[in-house]
Image 1 (tube, rainbow, N blue to C red):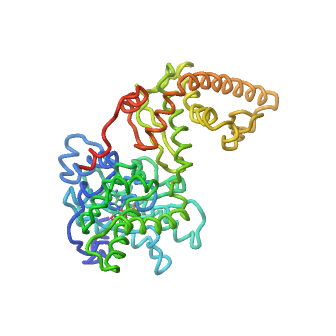
Image 2: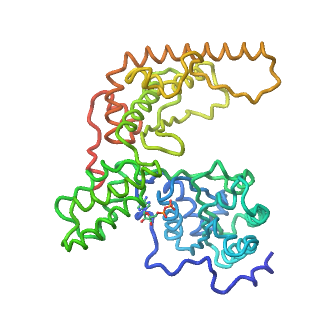
Image 3: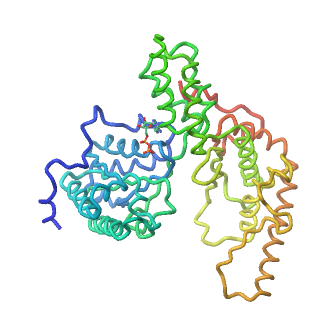
Length: 444
Ligand code: ADP
């Protein structure tokens, strides 16, 4: 393989133009969990051989998933910045862009350059453009490019000191070969920022401009649910341009509001701006999951609840298993069902049945998976009846539970609308009616 290194260009097209100063983790806000997960990648790159000696096992490929503009590129650059290693940038959509069929060669060059400069980071933006399942115009060449990528990733060994970080907003559309063990087998979500994250991002970008006394980042953060980091930066920039057009000495709140409205219009087209009604509905829905998890015996402990969208979901309630759950008891199984139903039941309880998105009264909360062809009609009927019975029993349990905890549900939903993300401890405080952290503290 080393013969290929000679072919690498002296000055690689993949090296970024010398940017002014390296990005650090402290520049990226509102994505603490992703940063935490990337820390061992930094430790590895700082000293690959020592890491290997200590028996540390590291993925070769890390996949960052999330909407455009949430800071995936920035995070990858920050990993390079923290570790003090070169950052090689490539975009999946550009491999075969200029001349069809050169993709495979460019992938080879990219990896050869990285090996020469190791330890180093390769960043591939829009991985789905090479690794997509759907048919493309020049599928045959895309396949070659994809295969070359797989060959390169399989080719390097643990202590070689090259880490490939890729980004995509469509992880489910990736070719399965790409996400097999030993390739992009570590996935890290980079979500849209919640209200605290947005305030921090706004403050970060407002450092570069002069703002007037009427500008409160907290109020701006409150009014921008669904905005990505890039949207927020864009908002600050546009406000600054507008202020200078008007020959003002400082950027005022009205400039920022004006810029916000322009971006909302764009964001509505992308459908990532969250309107008040949807946020309220989501807060009750997630609140229902969370309360059910909290009060149902056998349920996995609650970890976090948020009414910020992630992937295709409007909100997320996450639980952490106590152990590996290799075996699951019937009690735990029923608890899982109840927690899953909690969202829907909460909505129905608060907003009435007609607000329930497309659930059928007759069929009940049943989802049918029709892939199993070999079952007889009568057997299938039996299974369906049993599933329906289980779910309906769950539904009435959860109804009884949430009806008796309506007061707590309201408290929780209101806190979610205000804070957007709550951890288990905060959920417990909120439902007891106790105050939680002052939101202003996070940004001071
Ligand atoms: P992605 O790769 O997810 O599309 P980028 O990393 O390219 O997003 O983000 C584009 C720009 O938006 C960044 O250069 C930065 O100025 C701003 N930005 C995005 N996310 C964040 C964040 N989490 N913290 C601070 N700035 C951000």
